[in-house]
Amino acid sequence: MTPLFLGVQGPALTDAERALFAALDPAGYILFGRNIVDALQLRALTDSLRALAGRADLPILIDQEGGRVARLRPPLAPAFPPAAVFGEAYVRAPATAMAAARANAEAIGRTLAAFGISVDCLPLLDVPAAGAHDIIGDRAFSPDPLAVAALGRATLDGLQRAGIVGVVKHIPGHGRARADSHLDLPVVDAGEAELERDLAPFRALADAPMAMTAHILYPAWDSERCATLSADIIGRIVRGAIGFDGLLMSDDLGMQALAHQPGAGDMGMRAALALEAGCDIALHCSGDLAEMEAIAREVSPIGAEAECRLRRAMAWAGSPRVPHEGMPPPVDLLVARRDALLSAA
Image (cartoon, rainbow, N blue to C red; front, side):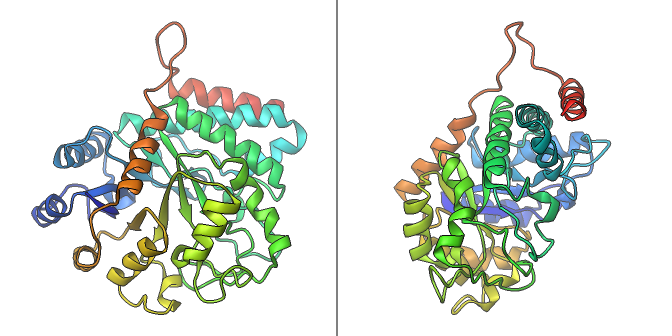
């Protein structure tokens, strides 16, 4: 097995992809809108990925946050709200907002499970700051770290109830960034004392099964390397100060933030540098075959510690929980419960 989560080109595997994936045995895959046509096609794609890997617990990831970041959309899935909706409700009625976030996440999770998707890149624990770029915006719960932690915990709980693994992101915090890391390298000039505010939700959810790094430069911690490529930040901050011991994946290697990092000009070197810095898994999303082949030339088989974290993370969700009557709650009932709770808040 190689320490990679890879994208797929289209709605079905090509012969070239099958050959590459069979040789590489990636740790898992990530899906996007380009991979989704209809319910039968999507289930066939996820089934084919599992059959190729020979692993029932294969991580198949998606970004299904709600709001503007949703790969599954109506009529295949309900239109889920952005995180900020729950943060606004939390101001009025914290416990009710948490219950709404939990029901919402369980509805998302049960939707994903029906299509054979096992991991959702959710929740965001970024704490937005005034003047930050809108790439986070309403994807964040709240500018209050306590609210972010509480709603993040409720979201993780809801996903777990549905048998879906959650991913906290973007560790150690994207909320202050004044640039979009898809397009440029954000530099966060806050001092260590200020950055404690950003770390608080991640520290509160340090027992999360998976986390995704931020492609952000924090000079207070490392003046040369962004978090994804910094052994100091991953070792001293993510594993140390935050105390996170779950599976750590990079954000997408294809984002332009990494193009501004020394020695990270091509995808293979980006993957190698992220893994060398301490990421357990390198994430590559585009499905570009040539780029994946370049990455394959630079990575070694997954290490024992990373493989242990992967298996522990996939076991975290277990089987979907059901009420005592033995039937899982339908998605529409969970959505109705969420809406009623938000109205009551």
